[in-house]
Length: 212
Image (tube, rainbow, N blue to C red; front, side, top):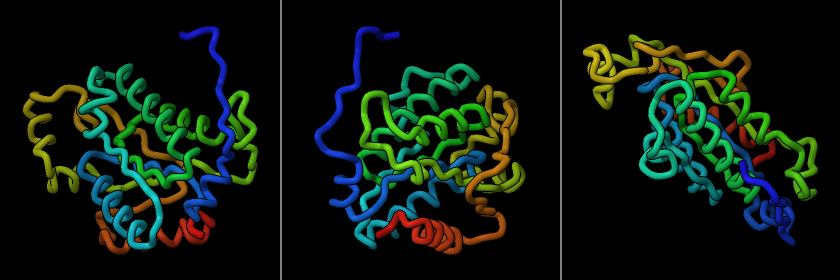
């Protein structure tokens, strides 16, 4: 762990950046099995936000593993570190005033809770610009679909390979998924269309005051 370091505060407060963007920074964390529709919903929501002139960015599980987390595998320890790194990126992007759409299987409740705790801190060490205690920085979105439905979709052919033993530690087959207990939103993609889910997400953001 690094020592002899201090947080260097900006002259701009988070509220200044949010005022420029005309929105509130927040992270929407999409969790669910592979094939549940996390990335699909993120892309649909991104398009809708962009059409409404809002600044947003998608952090997708596969994309992140091409770079920032390319050194990590899929065992429990590496999964934990993967989510920890993403949580830190989300924290920075949210502080910058962006609407972050994070699409990660993130199968372990403790890892998701750690990200929530990180983002819901009132302020960083030595930085008083994040002192708005009413702010909710982390919105957990459970993209719900059972294993059978995800197997039928199997857009990447991963379930078939996992059942054949070609992929180890695959969530839903050879590794567990701990479903969220109290998510802000549950979107059952087995029952709802992409359009219905996107409308529900936009309504949540509007009602929560994230979209000015």
